[in-house]
Length: 258
Image 1 (cartoon, rainbow, N blue to C red):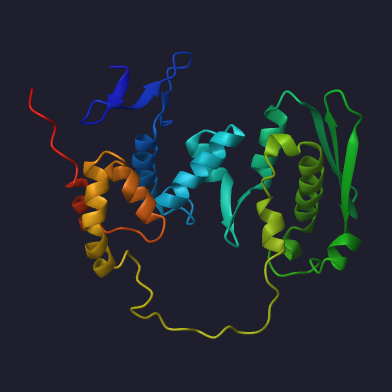
Image 2 (cartoon, rainbow, N blue to C red):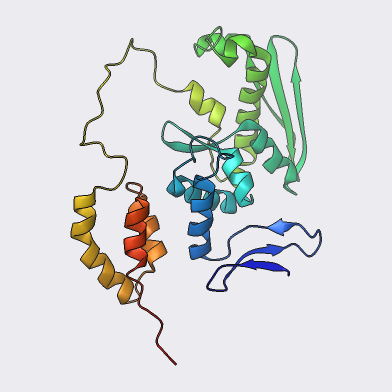
């Protein structure tokens, strides 16, 4: 059997004819939603995506635009301060795999990291990040990676500058996760702890769901949207419970008898 199918006989996965490997890349919007739900329930996805099918779906779309397979996108894209960003190693992999890249060479003399890159048809360019740069940015000695692995962090910062400047079209303007982490808010003392109340529900409020259900039923019955499309749309605001999802799917009209 060369493909896996759902109960409605739509293929969820195909085998790559060249390697025989299973390709889980969704081919339709409905398959993307279903795959996102599977990923969100998996313990193998990063915490930014666990339990959040909407984040999984958006990350897969970003990955598709960058040329990444769905699982590569989930592992390579992070959510930093509310923005999607790409880890430095994935940045390097994307650029090196592009036919526009001739070479990327990274060096560090103990005081300054240098990243030299060559784009096809253009002269070599280089970007640096030094110990003095780290001090000026308030990064030197900062708790965490900057105090534990300063050489590696200088390398990633020089890399980010070089690859984003020279291969902006390959990276589609995607920011670098390590850079966004460093640009986080300054420490302004202990934050006030606000206890969670009923005004902060983990799931879509049931009273609002009941109020909107007749309108959503009409949308599904008219064929303007499928139940899965509505689940993805509504779930982007707040996760739906299993019962709420089942209620929306129950709105799908039964197929006409032949």
